[in-house]
Structure formats: structure tokens, C-alpha cells
Length: 552
Image (cartoon, rainbow, N blue to C red):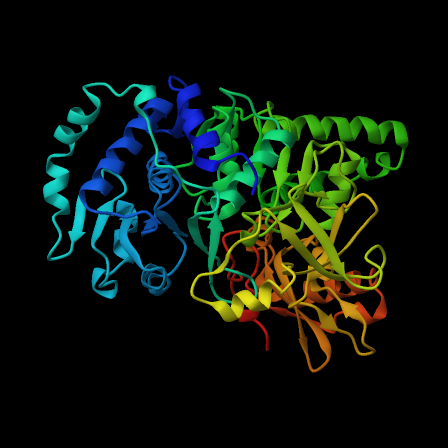
């Protein structure tokens, strides 16, 4: 266990130290100071007490990113209950399953999520509470939740007086050994499992961020990653909150236009994102310009190329608000071509690596200290092992153990035993290499690995990165059929319409793409055909394609 306590040292201290600063802002709506957060936590703690919620009870939380979501999360874990965050993109049947499987006694749900749930499918809930205003939407026949809520103001004033003071904030003694969250993952290789995270796992992640990622009190960030996922929860919310940062939540669907508008307005000091966003900017805004003459020729001339890279860099920095120290990308690999181009122009970005089971961070390095094609160095709270004879040259499964690791999967001992071995090593399911400085180089998922005709290892992500950079391709997926590689491609219909190209021209375009891609690949990696796919591929919240749905 690390000595820094999640509740006492990171959450409680932030309330005491930053009482008058702005903690959360719902963009185009309202803001909450740290003292408002303290008041909300104190009120909910009274509500939990009055309704006999016990430490260790599970409370589910369903809603999009907002100040109310964040404050409710903090109230649950500082009380000693276990929060069960539910991704808002989950289907209704999955939401019902998670609430029931987790043994949740209460559910906080945002008003705009109400139509996704059926209270009759969750018979063990004692109450369903509005996340927006804490009104009681449903309560059990023998419960008195509404009655207690009606006198909450009276109870609050009796305990704290008319105005809550920071020194009145007192939390239960919650050890880092305690379970604080059960996160149900939505993976690219299978269905959701409840990841049990301790206070120690979250505290270890926050401690690493304190020591290695720069944020200061009154800095600002824009939170776009789903808070119900550990990447967004830990690094877009918990760590910034512990530093006195103003976290700005988007209140609309994060389209590129809305995102860039938010960055321009907030001018964040740090940006956390998934690769898909910068890949789209590269493909839509940068690639068309650098592919045309005379720019294409000038990029081959050292002096001219330097000026072009500098100009593009400045434009891109300004598009993200112009004030960030670095952009941290995670959740999925960055396209190789995009990675190489951004490094050439010295764009301030870096790639991290993690998984829910580690709360989430596994590796990271600052943008000016990382290595090309790596996702940073293993964090200091973990040990790394590559399951191969030579971890520097022979690809093997990435394995880790240490402070960040989950307890296991809730009520699923079999899956836990398959993931964490007898020596305490967590098998990530990712394949990669390392080097003498403990940098991590990911090659692909073990479950997506395809064996070539002569036993060669084929990583579909590498081939997809070539295809995805081609004109008129929105996204692609490599599958194996009858020992041949097939590329499923969802076309970029927006680009087709913009250039007045009819759908009937797609087969010829795809054949040209196939030939271009194959010319860049060794024979055993070459694709035999491209099939046009009629819709976008279904994805996880981290925007990874759910590959298991498309295996034929």
C-alpha cells in the first residue's frame, strides 16, 4: 500500500485547500466551487446516514459527464460506500444487468437517461434518485427515503449551521485497502466484467500524476472522456480535483466543432483525449494540404520543411486553445503515419497506456521525454514483464503487477484467475516489447492476433493504420477468412459527397486502395480483398472497435 490515502490526502485536502476556487463547470451552464462540492457531499452523507446506507454498500451512478455526476461520485466514495459508474452508452439490458449484478442498493440517474431504465427490471433497488436535483424518482414500498429527503435542509442546518465551513468537513476513516469502485468494462474482445478497484489503485494513479504530470491550482481542463471509464475518471476528474483545477464538462455531444469551440473558450492547460480525434484532424485538415504541390515537394527540402512544420504546429496548437502544456492520448493506439508526422513537427503530445484493471495507468512519459512508437515508460508503482524469451526483440504478452492492480472481477473468480496468475502478474492481453529503460512498445491485442499461412504473427492494427490513411476511408477492420486477410471498410461518405463521387465508384476506389496498401506490406500481410461495410463499426467508450462482433 502507498502511504498517501485517497480520501484523506487527495479529496479531503483539496476541499480544505481550495474552498473558494472553482471546481467544476458545466459548459454553457453552471459552475461549482470547492465549497459547493463540500456542501453537496455533506448533504448526501446525511441522506445516506438517515437511510441506513452502510459502508461497503454499492450505489450505481448513470449519467453523462457533469458537475452533479462528479459530486455524487465523491459523496459515495468519501462515505465509504462503493460507487458503480455505468457508461451512458450501455444498452438498457446491460444497465439493468450491472445494477443487479453489482448488488447496488440505490441508483442515481440523470434525467435524460431515465428512458433507458425500467425499475421493474431492478427489483432489489431501495431507491432511484435523480442525479440532477436529488429528487426521489422511485422508492421501495418499505422505504422512507422521500420522508427523510423532505427534512434534509433541517437536518443539515442542525448539524452544520447556516453555512458550512471547511473545518466541519469530516469523512469516515477509509483505508486504501478498501474497495471503492466497481467499473464494468466494455471491451473490444468480449463482454463487460466488474473490475473491483481499491482506494490504493486510484491513489497510486493520482500520486503518479502529481509527480509526473503538471497541473496547478486554478488551471483549467476540458473533460471529454466518459467519467464512468477509469481513464476519464482518474485523469479528467479525480487527479485535477486533487490539484485545485477547474474541470469543465461538455454538456453536448463532443463533435469536432463543439470540441474545438470548447478548447477555444476554456484554453485548457492540459488536454486528455483518445487518438481518434487527432487522427481525424490530421486526415481532414492536414493531409489534404501536405499531399498537394508545391507543399509535397517543399517537405523534401530541409529548410522549407522546417518552416512548414512550424506553421502547421502553430495552427494546430491554436486549434486546441493555444495554452496546453501537452496532449495526452490514451485508450487506443495512434495511427503510425500520424504519430510520425506529429513527431517531425515537434507537436506537444504523448501516448499513454493503461487498462481499467490498473485504475488505469500502466505507462506514460512526458511529450519531450518519450520515445518514438512507444507509449511511455512503465509507471513507478508497477513492475513490467514481457512473456517472451527476449523482451527486447521478441514480442510477448505484456504483464504487470504492483500497487495499481484491481482486486479482481466482481463475483467472477474464474475470469479473475485467468487474468491474474498465482504470482500476482496481471495478463493484459496486449502484445509488445520493452527496452532497457522500461519503455513499452505495443504491437497489438493477443486476441486479435492473426497467424499467417506459415505461422507469421500478423497484427491487424498495423494494416488498418495503412488503410485508414487513404482517401474515402472512414475506418477499417482486418479479419481472417479461409486463411486470407479481408479488409472490411466503412467509406467516408462525407468526402465522397464533397467531391461529387457516386457510390458506384467505390469498388474501383477500394481496388486501388488495396493495391496501394499491398505495395507497402510484406506478402504475408497483404489483403486479398476489400469489402465495403454498410455502417460504422460498434465501438467501446475508448473508441476501440469491438472486434469480437465481426469475426466470421
